[in-house]
Structure formats: C-alpha cells, structure tokens
Length: 242
Image (cartoon, rainbow, N blue to C red; front, side, top):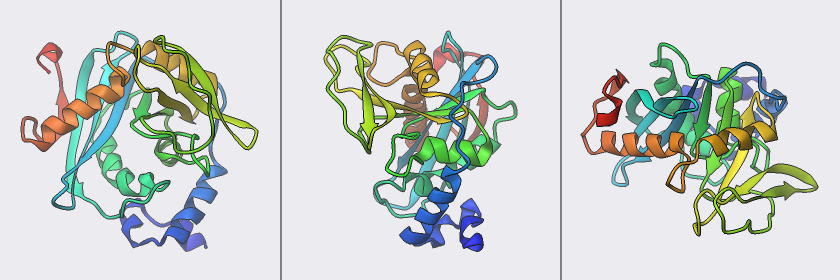
C-alpha cells in the first residue's frame, strides 16, 4: 500500500481505479479545513483544455491581484494526458499538468481557485483539495456541476446560495453567481474553512457565471490551445491587452 500511496504524480497514468481510491483516502487524512491564515494579495485560477482528437493537454494558471482581480501573470504548459476520464478522479487526469504549471511560477500565488471541486466530493478529495494537500497550498474549488451531496435551489438573485450536504455534513455551497443562470458549486480545498471559500468567491464575482480567477484561466488556456499564447511563464504588464 505504501508504494501505491507514494506513487509520483508523473506515474498517475499507471494506477488502477482501486489504487487511485487508496491515494484519495490517504490524502484525505491530511486535509486542513481551518480558517485561513494571512492576507490574500494574489489569487490564481487553474484550468485545463483537452484536444478532443489527441492526448494533448493544455494547462494554465492565471495569477490575479486580489481583491481588484487584475491579471498580472500566467503560466502555460502543454503536456500529454495520462489518465482516463473517470468521474470523481479528475485530479489524476489534471494534476500532473497543473503541477508543471505551478512549478513555473516564480512567486507563488497566495490562493488558487480550481475549475473543479474541493471537499464537495464523495471522498472529500476533489482536485482543489488533492492539489492543495500535495503542495500545502491554500485552495478552493468552483465547479460547474455538482459532484456529490444534495442542495435546495438557491434564489435567482446574484449572490444567493444554499448549503450542499452529504450524509449530514456540509461540504460546500450552491451559489447563484449571476442573475438567472445555473448555480456554481463552491467548496474549500485545503487550508481554509467553508466560510472562507464562500467569502473569497463572493469577492471574485464579476459579470459572468464563473468567478474571475477560473474565468480568466479558462480564457487563457483556450487561447493557448489555439496558438494565440505561447507556453511558459509570462508577466502581464500590459494586462488590459489580455
């Protein structure tokens, strides 16, 4: 079991689902959901884009100032997919690429928002939590679909939210991030509380359904995929041009 749990992320493609589950159960014991410490001055959004006709993965993080949410840097990496799509195991598919993206950033962001789940997950270990534990980073998840639990539909007004619960435990929030759109699902990943995850997300809402960190990450990664942006780390001094 120890060899499975200590499998390097670069070898995730060699795992069976049973072995991946063991890793999730082990990492789950290391999750910290305590109130966040320190001030957030930068927040990154993380996302990937897949080429449907190949195994190529385009991964990126966009670093924004906080709370004014101006893009100040981006890190982009092209790599190869090594793990199949299996609901509940997104981290094993995306984390190897996102770790490379993170390693390229010389000054790490204070917090990272993922296009995926934190503890709003059957085993409480979505991609935001998995990444947070591996890197000991403050993380949260903003997912477009509910992966686990039950909730009542929130009100139609921007900022309305309800609790997502599973087996008597609150694991996140269903948030109406824009008037008359489907809710997004917010949950802490690592090194923050449930309240922190909602407070941060509320400050990241703009004119769109997705909060600005993950919206920007989605935009930059797709521009990278179609060749508008180059691989590597880039400081965005002329941020308004991006």
